[in-house]
Length: 191
Length: 437
Image (cartoon, one colour):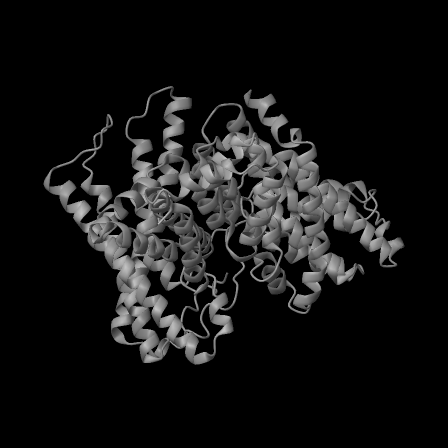
C-alpha cells in the first residue's frame, strides 16, 4: 500500500491548470472545516462528560450531534485527503505493467472512481432533497432536522468528485505524473 | 448462478480492482456498485448513500479519530525518546538492557497510541541509532523496532480492535482487555529473540552488557514520562471502571494528550498544532471512508446471499475445527500481506464471525489471533508498512537487512498464535475477570 507524503501531492504544481488549482483550494477549505468539526466533536464530548459525571446532569443532544459532526468531518475530509493523496491504495498491478500500461491503468481507475463517486454524490443529493422536502427529523428526543446532517453527503461527495476531476486534468495536462505518484510509503498511517 | 460461484467471481473482481492502485475505499464502492447494478438494476444505486450514512451513524466510531489524535499529539513531542531513555536507565541491570528498553518503550507507547507505524516511528527515531552506536547488529536494531511497533494494534487502545468491534458488534472494552496479555506475551517473545540473536551473533558481551547510571540520572527522567503514565492509567480507569464509554474516554484522553504536549512539551506554535490536527484528520478520514465503503460492500455481499451461503457451506464441511482455524489463519495472513488491516477486518470479519462462533471459538480470542495475523502483514513484503517506516528513519540500513531482521519476529508471532491456541485463556481470562462473563 502506498501514500505519498503530505505537502507534495503533485509532480509539478507550477504547471497546474487554473481550474485544478481553484478546486485544490476548495478541497483545502473543505479539509479545514473537517478538522474543525473533529475539534468541535472533542470539545462537545468533554462537555458532555463534564455535565454527566461532574454536574450529575443529563445530556440530550450531544451524542447525536457528535455523531453527525464525525460523519460531516469524514465526508468533507474526502476531497482534502484525496488532494494529499492520503487514501490508502495498493498498486501491485501497476508495478508489473510497462509505463504505457500504467498510464492507461491510472486513467481507468480514476475514471471508475469518478463514476462511482458521481453516483454517490447524485443519490446523496436525492437523499438530502427528500429529507428537506418532507421535513424529516431524527426519531430521538432532540429530533434534529435530518437534512442538516444529510447535507454532508452531496457536499462532501460533490467536492470529492471535483477534486477527482482536478486530478484527471492534472494527469491529462501532464502536471501530475501517475507513474511517480503514490510510490513512496509515508510514515503516518494507521494500522 | 449459485451464491458460492458468484462469491468467487466477486472475490476475483475485488482483488483485481483493489490491486489496480485505486484507493481501497473507492475500490470497495466500485465493486459493490458494479454487482448491485448487474443484479438489481441502476435503481439499486439509490440505496448506497443511505447505507454509507447508516454505517457511519455510530457513536463508537468517534473513538477512532480520538485515539488517533492522542497518538499524534504524543508522537509530535519527544515523549517517545523520553520513555525510551527512562526505561534504559531503569533497566540497566537486565541483560541486553538496550534492546529490552526499546521493546518496552514500544509496548508503553502502544498503550498510548492505537497505530503501529506511529509507534514504530516514535521509538525508532531514537532507538535505532542508539542500538547501532552500541554495536547491535543492524538486523536486530531494525527488526526489533519494526516488530515492536506492531504492538500498537494489539496493546490497547487499538484502532484495529475498534474496527473489529464495530464490524462484528462485539464489546470494544472487552476486545481491548483481550489484547493485554497476548501483547505482553509478544513483548516477551520479542525480547527473548533479541537477546538470543545478539548473543548468537558473537556479541555475548553486548547482549549482557550493563551501563551504569547513578540514582540521580535515574530519577531525573521520571518527571518527563510521568504525565503520560498518568494519562494511560486514567484512560484505563475510565474505560474499565465503567466511568465512560471507549469513545468518551478517548475524547478526554485526546484532550489531555494535546494539553500535555502544549504545556509540558511547549508545543505552542500554531503550525505544530495544525500538523497534529491535519495528520489526524487525514488518517481518520481515510479509515472512516473505508468503514463506510466496506459497509456498502458487505451490504452487497449479503444482498446477493454470498455471506450467508459461504457461512452455511463452510458449516456443512465436515472438517476439524483446528483445520478450519488453520485455513482461516492462512487466509488472513495472505490478505494481510497485501491489504491494510482495516480493510481486511471490515471485509472478512462479518463473514468469518458466524463461522468462528459456530465452530466453538471465542470471538474475543479470535480478534487477538486476527490482529496478530495483521501484525505479521505489517512487517512482511510487499506492503509491510513498518518496514518502510524503518527505512525512512534509517535510510542507510538496506531494506533487505530490515526484512531479514524482521523475519525472526514473524516467527515469534506465529509461535504466539500457537501458544494462544493452546492456552486461549491468555486472551479470554482478563475480560472475564474485569467485565464478567
